[in-house]
Length: 81
Image 1: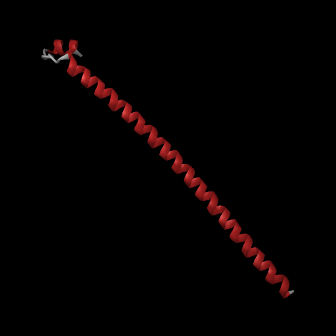
Image 2: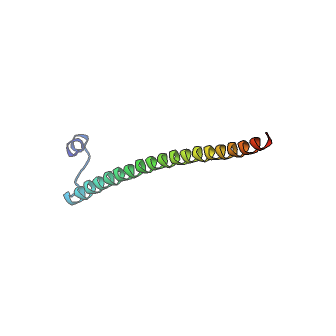
C-alpha cells in the first residue's frame, strides 16, 4: 500500500504503531464477523429443527385426535347395531 501511495504522490507517513493498530483492529473485526456468521448459521439450524419438531408433533397430535374420534365413532356404531 505504501508503494501505491508513493506512486500516486500521496504522503503516507503513518507510524508503524498506527498501522499495527489498524491491522489488529481489522483482524478482530474479521474474527467477530466470522463468529457472528457461525452463530447465525447455528440459529438457523436450530430454528429449522424446532419447526420440524413442531410439525412432527402437530401431525402426531392430529393422528391421535383422529384415532380417538374413530374410537368414539366405533363405540357408538357398535352399540346402535
